Length: 194
Image (cartoon, one colour):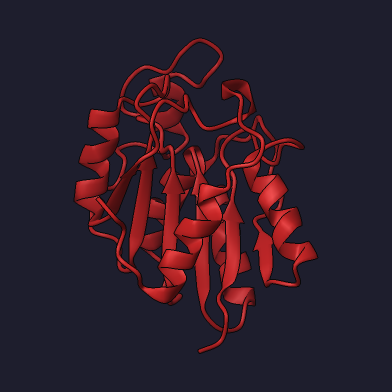
């Protein structure tokens, strides 16, 4: 089987220099592994439909199998995208999805802004591909209980990441080595250890 291309889908903050997704993309590229990402769309652009369309453009441009690597709002973009795409996906790692159906901390979009921009309601259909949801015990953007509810609805396996905040530079994360292991498990079809 051809090695899947890793398609990186960042969250609302777009590509950040010290974010684990950015660092992982660089590491995979340096190792000669197939990787690409959804291009930056601007931190102030909340249009969910435009972001979903960007995922579709990139996914359709790739030949062969793909594995999606999404973080934060990127996870919600992917579940919206999965409802309308015909693109085959080998698997998806959805890390620290936010609970957009509850008020966000200050500095994040309001529920009304998210509704108007097409994010709500968060889709609850089972995803048409294998997926792993990584949840944090102390994520300020979504409780582990709510993230687990989303994961069950999506038919995703879950991985308890421990107390990692929102798994971003503000939570003390640059590199996230576990991501490569989870991508490998999606690629090979290995089960996730409880």
